[in-house]
Image (cartoon, rainbow, N blue to C red):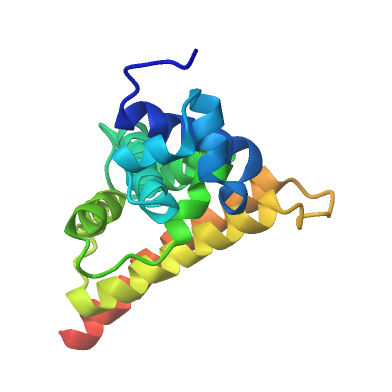
Length: 195
């Protein structure tokens, strides 16, 4: 006999567990339903379909990343806070590789809820960089630079593409240090150019 009283949150958690083992591309509604001991059509009482379920996972993944980064950087300021956020990002990826994939899915401009969740981790970095005082347009370039650097590193690392004996941990420290030096020095140059 199947379980009763299943709610939306339980289903999302179940999908996340499956993705943690198999990845995003392997997620099927039938697998979620089987794991939840329910029939696949019953999932449509909570979600419009697979895409809607993945969106829910994407939403929760961004919330989890925010919690990771907020906890890591609390009571810290400036460069130390930035460094803590970078390490929290990498640690989050290592622990949640399967669901992290949802963060690379494009977000529709009308999805205000998901956009807000996505910007919460970004806002943590933005608050730290306020001390650098760069203009808004340049700040967008910097945020993209930071995200591409961190995402590129963790993605390559997870695929086993760091095959040399040199420590990946040490390489990540170098990357973070270079980000700090680059962001802070570039901002100073920008400010001088406008003065």
